[in-house]
Length: 209
Image (cartoon, rainbow, N blue to C red):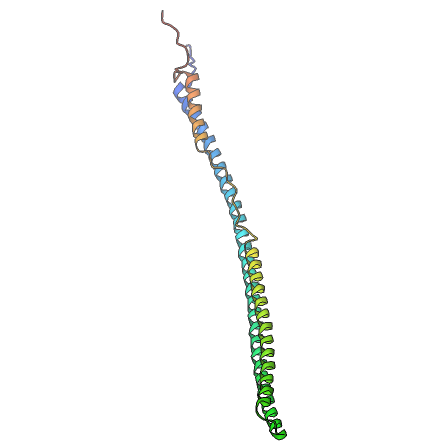
């Protein structure tokens, strides 16, 4: 009894599907790898941005503290100067009144009256006014210097607070979704053409006899 051996070969459609399955598995692995790389790159960029933002916050906080301290010191010194000026002016006019009274008593004891006494009192008043004016001018110069110091502190603050700029994220390469999917279709098409399951429209047809 003879045994008939039959050699079974895969059908073209099965080979095409198998080829597409393998290509799909490769495409899935590629997409997964790209997604992981994309996510990791985005995390790195975000970490850099967060670090710079923290530096910006710390830098501006310190700049603000220094600026407010400078302004407070200038204003306190100016207030103390004005208070001292008021005391000096009071002392000047108190001394003027005391001098005028002494001159009046001395003039009465000496028998000096009239215009001479008025001239002495006017001279006391003139000297007092001149001294008060010099004090006022000096305080005006001090006020101007305080203003300039605060303006300089403001400039320093602006420069310090903007010395660290926000981090500009580098563009992260996007995931190529089309490439792997196209590869699956291309693999199936190639296998289908080779096995005859599909007909390549670009292949010249043999003319019928």
